[in-house]
Length: 68
Image (cartoon, rainbow, N blue to C red; front, side, top):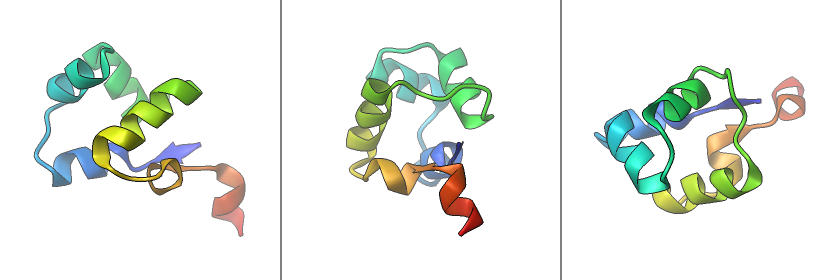
């Protein structure tokens, strides 16, 4: 699964540390999500989407969708 987390975060001028604090995760978790080394839990995906005021699908791209 790919995601647009880094792109969206940078567009809004938010640092990894700020996002991590708001979501109650480590900065390393944010970095791992952005680099595709880690897929979020459903709860974390919802928290991220809510934080940015977006849908989960706008942030996280399911691989099957990419092939369509």
